[in-house]
Image 1: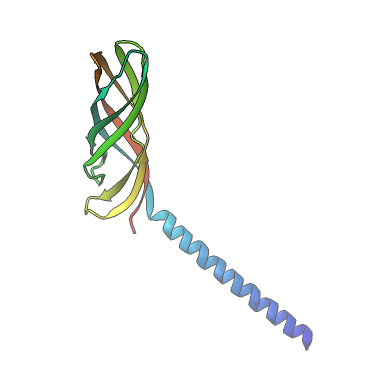
Image 2: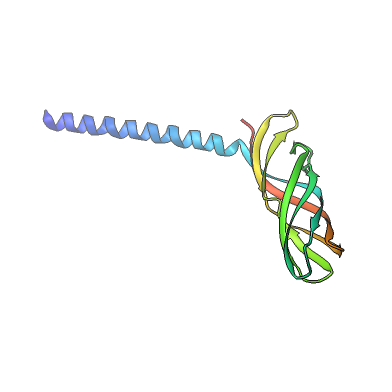
Length: 153
């Protein structure tokens, strides 16, 4: 009789574990199939004025610009976002060139306006300018893109 109890107990435990495992796998499959990767792109223009104390000095500047991104289908987008990007460089000649990295998180929306994900933008934009007296006006622009995972639950 005790062998039957052990067998039935083991069978029930095994069946319970199998059902829980199937439920977990099903939940995971449903979540994974409701999302996808989307690439958004937009045009970013940055500009700013920096004080240059003397030739051959280290300078920090803050560049500003607006960015709005959209995917190729028009189904996903980011709001128009104001960016304030810090750059630092050595001013050792009359011409300055450096790369600005926005390093910012952007919220992604679907065409109904629902939040469906977010992404981190760290793509560099080249900025440059000529030193005039003790100031340099830095400007640069270009297309940026990021790939994000969007979830349509």
